[in-house]
Length: 387
View 1 (spheres, rainbow, N blue to C red):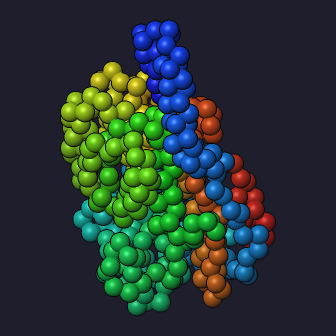
View 2: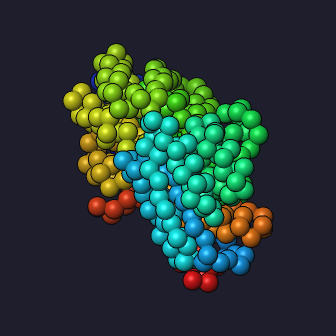
């Protein structure tokens, strides 16, 4: 880890200065103690994220019927971050006997988010769950669903009245809630950002020089970045040397990869970076850029979801070092549970999803598997639903 590299450098420096001076020795000890004290709050926070800030899924649920036709609108089936949670939501709904239709929103290209919602309305859907489709990206479709009195539950989708959107009144029937510590998607994503900052601060011994890849074109990115920047600001010996703001289009045209590679060349002293999604690390060649620069052992890139390919990168210290995430499959079960409550006109509840940090020595998924929270939430939901 990077702490080991820094410790080795300090040891070499001490050897070069000689050992005849008692004051030099005590000064080194004092400096080490000072460093430990300065990063102590971040280390304490990181330990909590290693444990995970989970709550528990609800153990009871309202009555429900199998006579439901559910439409799930996906943010984009070409992305594992969209397709995975959609498949899990479909599985969970099938446990209830619901009929499920999945519509690929294809990242909103060609007005496809609105098209999906309008098709659900035309098909007389009983219910709609949207996965990663913010209200401002499909406002006319959400308005159509509301006018048709079709309940809509957002899963990591931000409603129009969200402070980051300021786009009119709420149009969702409900938004899936997370843990008691951070109930909303915004609060949870801010916690993800803080967890990433804590990892970087601790693993650079409070000497972080960060390239911040800010997905400013996505509401979730705005909140994650807010948490990251605010936590980094508490480390007075750390610095964000470069912020790269990017949008979804930058992840498909090669711009992000080019800008990141340029930043690595521009800031040879940079020792860490963060980005919203593990998918971006692979698809946009960020790990490859670190490999090409020969800095896989001295540069820490912190990602998120813990996909199997990324897990392998972390295990081999080959372009990614850690991730901070919540279990998106748990979120999907929670979205279906939320819809049960909406259909039965009952209050929604916290579904329990929390944030956990994973790296080479903590919570690393088994080879070939994606990250998953260490809680058998599926069994708890099935028992609560009586299926």
